[in-house]
Image (cartoon, rainbow, N blue to C red; front, side):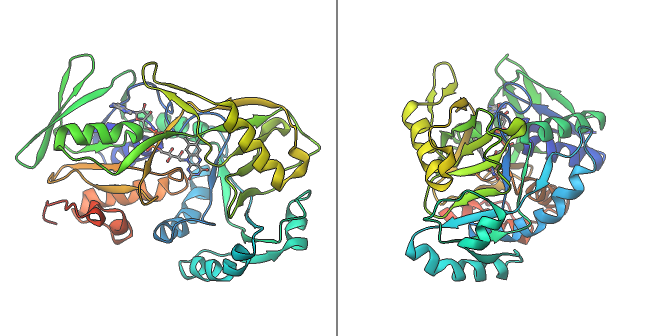
Length: 379
Ligand SMILES: Cc1cc2nc3c(=O)[nH]c(=O)nc-3n(C[C@H](O)[C@H](O)[C@H](O)COP(=O)(O)OP(=O)(O)OC[C@H]3O[C@@H](n4cnc5c(N)ncnc54)[C@H](O)[C@@H]3O)c2cc1C
């Protein structure tokens, strides 16, 4: 049987590989480093939220609400996903005034949410700053232990016959007559692509697309900071917390630690291919968190990590499409810091696309066509 090749063993690579293997396909994953070494790994937990999300991704989140709890039951590590509710905090007059419009928009896409005044917010999360005037609340939002989940799905995939080659970087893709024919690896091997090629290399996708298709995707790589405080049992975090205008996200972490993130940048060193947190971002992120939860002011930080690259897209939603002109090639890039929550749904839709040779309607908004680039393969 012809083999499908998946590039990247992050959450997308392992979910798609598992779904293909379950349909009887032979699948090989080629991973430059190790399973969950990219954005799908690292400290803390990932938010699984619809609240505050781009309109074009909301229908995917409505489906994701159904997918995540069911996935928990299949894992060999116990539940990774937890429903906590998400408070999108509002402070500024203009954000309070526009809250109803966002609530309507989210509800129109099947997302349950409601406005909470300051007192109602305090009943969900104690210790909020006086400036918080209210919040949009999504009860079905939650968090997921991303690294444990990705590794658990990788094990399931292997149990279904998927071969995962770590320390295997793909450096070139060969295309002939509208077909991906082979990939070349950094250790000098050439592998035939008898089935389909799935490029889920996140930060590595754009470079491979550019060299094979002479096409520059409107994406760039960012290393995003995550911090864990020292244990703070006096500051119990009961919901996933985001903010309408501050760059901050707050989550509970094991051992009474508080996870603080939201999109502050670290520094990426191209030569060593590693990232590290920078003092300005650590101070800035902590200050934003303390502006929301004053008890966090001056908290000592146990860990600040910025070693996990994420590709960002110019219009803040991913590109999910066929490789240009190719009948047997698919890629995704530019998750823009929120690709985790929609992963189970997008992975299923991509496999559905392969099976039916037709782009599912839910993926239409993410095509290259929005940048005037056509996928050219006739569907
Ligand atoms: C700090 C941080 C916080 C985030 N928070 C959230 C959140 O709260 N909610 C949310 O929904 N999303 C969040 N995200 C985004 C989410 O984690 C990612 O969108 C998602 O994990 C992407 O999965 P992936 O499989 O596409 O990529 P990755 O997990 O990055 O996997 C890609 C893999 O490809 C490999 N690779 C790269 N190039 C090559 C190559 N040439 N050959 C072979 N392998 C290659 C890499 O080593 C990597 O393992 C966050 C991301 C980060 C970094």
